[in-house]
Amino acid sequence: MLKISHLSSGGVITNYHCSAKCRHCLYKCSQSRPRDYITEERMEKNLDVIQRLGCSSIHIGGGEPVLNRKGIENAVKTAQRCGVYIEYIETNASWYKNEEDAFEFFDFLKAHGVTTLLVSISPFHNEFIPFRKTESLIRSAERRGISIFPWVSSFAGELAYFDVDKVHSIDEYCEKFGKNYMLGLPSRYHLTMKGRTLETFAPFMKKHSLTEILAGTGDCRSELSSVSHFHIDLYGNYIPGLCTGLAIDTDDLGQDLDEAKYPFLCSLFEGGVKALFAKASSEYGFIANSEYVSKCELCIAIRHHLVSAGVKSHDLAPEGYYS
Image (cartoon, rainbow, N blue to C red; front, side, top):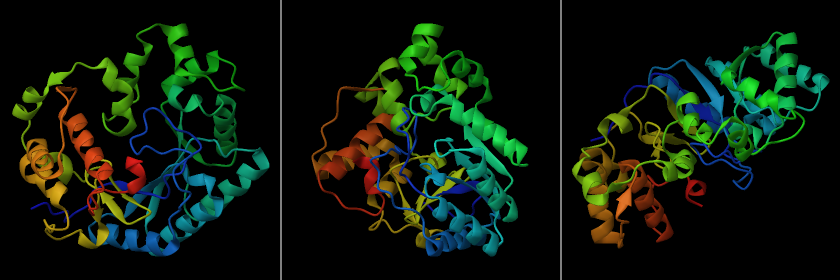
């Protein structure tokens, strides 16, 4: 049975609401996701589990964590109180107004032991956020002694080619840098082909027959049991591996999963997508397409069907992921 008994490196997702709806977002964050934000109580519970399972530091991500200034400050204070080091906070810079406001936030972070921001730099983000905001935030942070982890700095020159006070579509990048520009983005941004990333890039990828997909898949044990980059969200969902839309209640970490509570996750762990497909087809009326680009695309299609059919299960969460 699947059992998460140790955590290596990972983070806490404070919110799924975001100022952007990036085409590559693994968690399908957007402006339409609920404005729910992690509470101090939930943050403390998440950190307690993380420490109990052997991890003493985290990063914070979203959504855009800094959209809720009080919320992120409470999360940071809670981490300091619990003795958990925050390696960095992820941000897309959309919240940046002016240097005075930014300095106030940066001073708060430093006073509570946070010294690094991961700042998103990519054409995906530039569809929603003018590069001027990104550049201004980086300069202000460096002036105030906050280190910047740019993700990914190699895109900066391309973003600077366009009017930095405006947003620009990826189509504009393709027109300027060539029709194959889009195809190079996954490797340059180190994308995982799940979530909205898969939806965006599936049309460019080779498809395989359903028979090939089912014949070529084993179990999903290595993916689901990976703890090298874990995430626990604001609802107390532990996301196994990077398989977004699947969840384990943090209360159930450290013990064998109950198959009655996690029927679909256990099917994937024990028999892979082939087992999930058999279960969904025989018990829930799932009808597959003739082709898919990968086992992950088939898995996501099955899970969307289950949720659309009204299936309620602890392992199919959060609900907003499937909306």
